Length: 371
Image 1: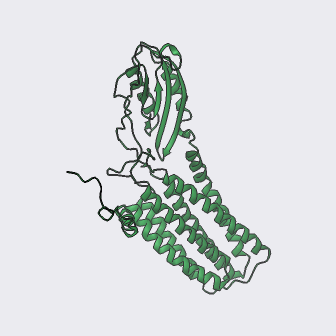
Image 2: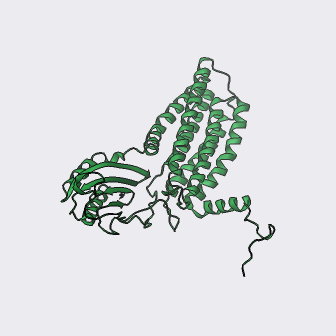
Image 3: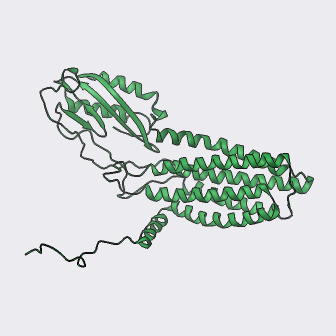
């Protein structure tokens, strides 16, 4: 006999264990080679940033101070990259049916904004110091700058050999890959994948042919799990640009230190800083442009020329009246999603049309399209 009630002290919901959560995230970071390299480089970068900032304040070197601030921003970028690499491997759910793979795109966008802010700060400070060059204590500026360069070269080596991106293995999938070949070929609304390829009789919207009801062709979420598996993801591209820009900053400090020691050119410090800030700003523009395009769900640029040809081929299929409302966007690096709506004849073979439409779009380009 089941009890009709239980005492309050008999049932205790599971408590949120912050330590267990942090431990799980830490294990997730260490389980992936790229994330593990990121973590160790973060510790190294953060340690040297404090050293560089302390000596920059003591020596009154803008180049060294700006380079240390840039290294702190690098640490923020590395931390965002670590968080994104963990979050992007979370399972998809009812609220986030595509998974969390766009966390990497968002992290890349945020890192790009950080870089723009850093470049603006360094340039404005450089202009002010160029107008009134201060005295810089450059006695030990060169050794500290060389040490900073070595730290950044370690970061570049890690990213070049550890990969800028990573493939998500295992069963922690992101998003859904829907088959177009399951279910009936009825004349109701046939949902192929994420696209609603609606087959309506007589060429009119929502006027159904001899078959009624909703035939869901493969809408049952067959998980092939698209992953961001390209050579570079936006998250790690942003982190890599941070490290490259910081390396350039270290080179700039070394050049200015040599010029100040050899020729007593105090203006070399702000001029080198301004040149580095311009290089940082120019290098981050492609990352921001691509990240904004993905977040705004722009049609993938690589498909701009191919999609019109695909539309024409689909409309030439037997039984297809018209193709309407095509939408294609990038989920994350190298994973494209598309939806189209087709108006077809009442007696057309819906299953065959779905199959042919799927083949036409998936054969476009080097990367697959989830239709």
